[in-house]
Image (cartoon, rainbow, N blue to C red):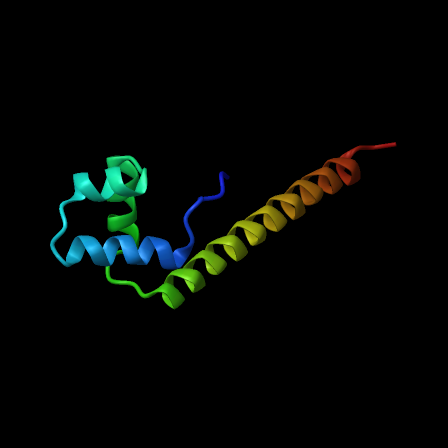
Length: 88
């Protein structure tokens, strides 16, 4: 997954600017982001503070690691079942 070039606090700051009344197009131009990125951020992070956003990203990373661990264990389990199911 590509790492964002914006920190959590920068994303929150941009969204706060939008909430204060600055239009999306000028914000996107000023910060060098696409409109799609801005609207995705707004949909995902609207109403959050920087600390909440940081915690959300930590939880998403932990979730990704746990899913990978589960997938590895599942493959190991299938391989062991296949091995034990064969007659010698």
